Amino acid sequence: MTTDETRGCAVQLQAVCKTFGAGASRVTALNGVHLNAQLGEMLLLAGPSGCGKTTLLCLIAGLLIPDAGGINVLGKSLGHLTGERISDFRRENIGFVFQQFNLISVLSATENAAIPLLINGIPRKLAHRRAEEMLDEVGLSHRRKALPAALSGGEQQRVAIARALIAEPKLVICDEPTASLDGETGAKIMALLRNAAHRTSRCVIVVTHDSRVFPYGDRIAHMSDGRIDNVKHQRAVTHAEAAA
Image (cartoon, rainbow, N blue to C red; front, side):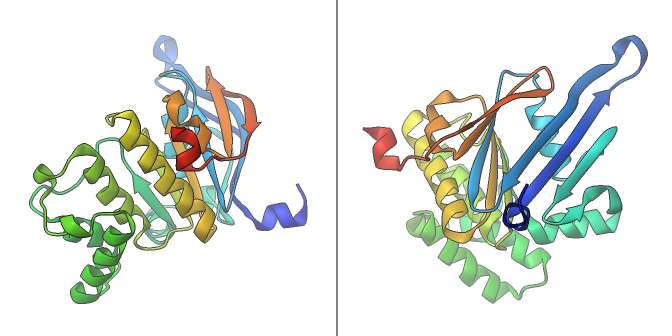
């Protein structure tokens, strides 16, 4: 890897291994994974259920500890961060978009989107103003006061994206963000995520088994049996091109 590539590298995985269980019930989830992800790109992790995609995502986020190998995220070796240090690192640098949205039912769209700023100690008035701006960016200016139960699946996912991006993290990780969405809404969600990567030099990593959204990735890492089989480079298409 050249110096320029290293400077723009968000995630570096070196021979990462992860197993669960012991003895006869021992399962190998990841077996010697090597992979890099760059700032300014959207990388898709694709493959069948059980191939290790979500485990890999959890390792990148520091939610799991590898059995072997090295994980470097935004210039930090996760193996050197423990306890509160890894929690602080996640809060300051990583945005999450979950498959099930994880919105708080009694809070409005604005209040849900503002949560990361409030956790970081930003005054409520300022946090809500920024949340409203983020909701405008994802096309939900008219739904700011709505509770999650009053929002469609696509609208809830856009609130989740606003929440993930509001603290301006350099890394955004998404677990099956289109799994419960129709094709058109899923395409819009992927376009939002791709634009977040390209416009602000973030790295966006998306776990997906939905081939309909493959055109939105800059690269696709195909996985099977706990390994990266191949990484496909491609030009990420616009929403209009994918819909044509």
